[in-house]
Amino acid sequence: MKINNAKFIKSAHTIEDYPYNTLPEIAFAGRSNVGKSSMINKVLNRKGLARISSKPGHTRSINFFNIDNKFYLVDLPGYGFAKVSKEEKEKWNMLINDYLHYRENLMGIVMIVDSRHKPTNKDQVMLNWIREVQIPKIIAATKADKISNNKKAKQQKVIKNTLDLTLDESFTFFSAKTGEGKQQIFSFINQIIK
Ligand SMILES: Nc1nc2c(ncn2[C@@H]2O[C@H](COP(=O)(O)OP(=O)(O)O)[C@@H](O)[C@H]2O)c(=O)[nH]1
Ligand SMILES: [Mg+2]
Image: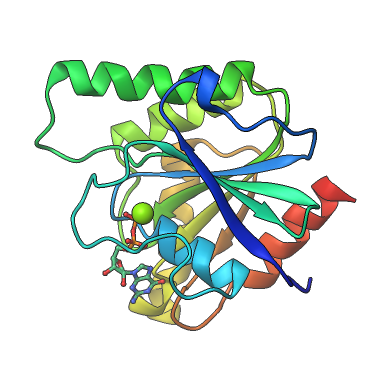
């Protein structure tokens, strides 16, 4: 897949803010600091497009990117950072669930976890929300450059077991550093937008 033009369109805090269009959308979800922005930048081959923030929890809105007028890529706000109020957490829950349930353009979701760790309770909650809306998904375990090949087989089992992945829920390792898994994400997107 060759990307010529990737353009940030807008940030949304409510449903009313979503950009109007009829293009298919692929959303990226994962806990804060998991490597979501790095993955988006790597997939799009654009260094600073989705901001890579060192401050967890910095992105608390839904960010829409237009890719070659062919599809939209959507950066969902990260979850799981410690220092937020109950109110903020509820706002986040609503932001995500409104998007999952009401965005008709949504055609695919990339759910990101950390390849080094057992998925958290919040990852499980997120995945179950995604399952509720029955949209094609791929689970990507990122930062794979940080684990050895020996450890990978074991981690794949831990992740698949913890998340209870079924056979039709695809899984890939990913690394924003080496580009591992980029093709898998591309073919997932291609299947959806073709
Ligand atoms: N080694 C390595 N570091 C990564 C990878 N992806 C992200 N990081 C680092 O992890 C931190 C958080 O990344 P970021 O993309 O901002 O995470 P986000 O909060 O999920 O958007 C940054 O310091 C990144 O450089 C990866 O695949 N490999
Ligand atoms: Mg980010």
